Image 1 (cartoon, rainbow, N blue to C red):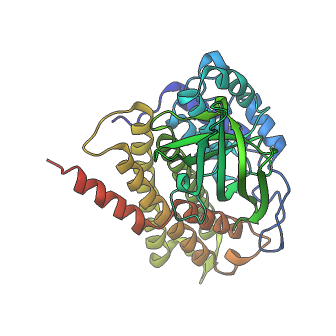
Image 2: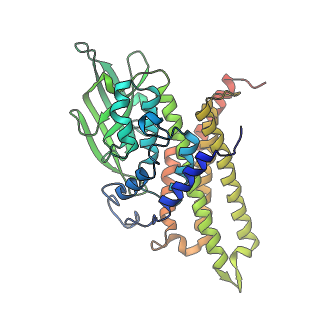
Amino acid sequence: MDFTFTEEQQAAVEAAKAVFGGVAPDGVPSPALTAGAVAEDFDRALWARLADADLLSLLLDAEHGGAGLDAVALCLVLRESAKVLARVPLLESSAAAVAVQTYGGAELKAELLARAGRGELVLTVAANGRTGHDPAELAVTARQDGRDGDVWVLDGVQTAVAWAHNADYIVVPAHTDADRAVLALVPRVHEGVVLAEQISTTGERLGEVRLESARISARDVIDAEGAWEWLRELLATGTCALALGLGEGVLGMTSEYTGKREQFGFPVATFQAVAVQAADRYIDLRAMEATLWQAAWRISTGAGGALPASGDVAVAKIWASEGVRRVVQTAQHLHGGFGADTDYPLHRYHAWAKQLELSLGPAAAHEETLGDLLAAHPLG
């Protein structure tokens, strides 16, 4: 494995820095001061700038107007987006589009991909299941209509779907009678689709998606083997990239603050207790980074290893879930009262970090998954 980024990947980072450089983390009302959602929609102006910079089509092939890059490039851009709390469905839409490209039929690709790359069409993914704890594909059933084999019928509920109220299509994993997972591209406005509002820890609108005998054309259902597993791992790895970027942004804020804040005539950053805590969090971030690139590399290349790629994803999730929590908690502590001041952006980062931690799930669960993989694939 080589952690050296290609020229194309580095160019994507530079383009992302240029786009996200003008984004204010406090551009919407504070979730701490807002009873409902902080905004009705995501940042459409930023979305348009991402499209103009060709950052929405990074993973798409040239025939669909894309750059043909990989998951590593996407994670690099997501890392930059999280540093400024960019309110866009970049992860969900990009991951869903590349899943269509990899596993979808020719007609579906022609219909969706170029438009998604230009930002004209927004995709999201229902990845949390009914409760947020059970496997997402088990929350919805999918069966082919006995009278019309070109139609699938979906029933079930998916909770906490990011950007569900604003996306054009929701990619819904579902299970069949044969115990296979399929992916259905469900239009947001469609007969049999009912959306209810939920509010995330960050104050963003989530959606409970209820499917009541929703009839979806077979053209819009991906039933290729392994499609959902691959998409799920890409989403998890991208979430780890968001956690890394947020943590790096927070540690940077903390370094700047403690370098200026003085007590007893000295910057508090020079105090041993402060320096040690900051150093511990820096170590967390480097571990989060190394495990992230390992997982992204395995997904991008399909390279073999002692364990399946899901093992590397589990390790990245362990570090991201624990690490992002420790980074923001230390930052709150070292900022003192400023950490809780709603006029200062740190409290927003704390809310976003908690949402990412919830999305990733507890480290103990991923450790159990890793243990099962090790038992099934003995090393040596």
